[in-house]
Image (cartoon, rainbow, N blue to C red; front, top):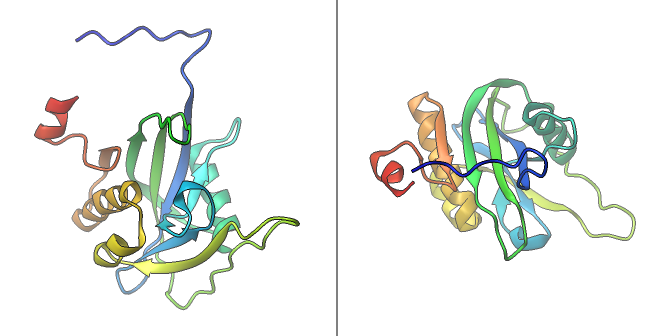
Length: 176
């Protein structure tokens, strides 16, 4: 199937960003609890969207520092995750880059950002998680991403995810 042409004058809307996979000495991974929007009350990896003229790596470092007070040490790309357009939010399709970062001790102080004047807290907590605990604290899209990344991390490889599940498996390739 021939891909559709790309309009270079008015390209499709696409967001991208960087997230951090920060393990501790117990084999758990740092997550933060969102306090607003569709993710309210659920956990996700620290990180976020890139700003104008900002790479996914720089976005990841800046967001993690802001959200946790930790300056991450990127080691390598752990994986990417493409997410579709969401008419419910409405959010443009996106491409996220998840960077494996150096280990952080579980007793390291995590400092969540204070509420801006006149607003509530952006993040309400953090947890060190495994694939089993994340099942109970994450919404389905974030958990699918977490699980795909967990498997890649445990296998020492880099993964390509398509809205959570691995995109390079035989079944996923057929669906594309």
